[in-house]
Image (tube, rainbow, N blue to C red; front, top):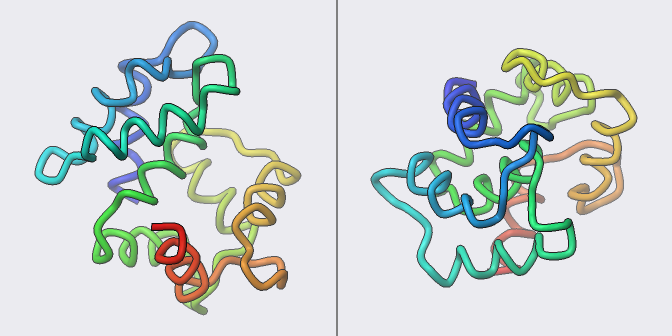
Length: 140
């Protein structure tokens, strides 16, 4: 949760009047978010390519997704555990909403469900750490 709050503060310091971040500022965001292990130039190029179709800017949710994909495994696990409020090993839409609300981002239920649907590898309506890790390793 602390890491998410830090990312929100970095995002807020760089965002534009439309509450989005220019793709050109992704390297600055990433370097501040991961000062000890910043993304490589190649990773940053891939991020920029992914979001080119979004009009040249990204939302906080998109930045979080991108940064979670970069995070070292131990940070991924601690981030996952912060989202998994009841400790049952999965993240449901209520837990996702709770975490975003805790850092001052209002996430509507239908967006939370859509975010989970995008990353739900087995179609059970929740995110599980092992499934997400497996998906990420296959994409690497």
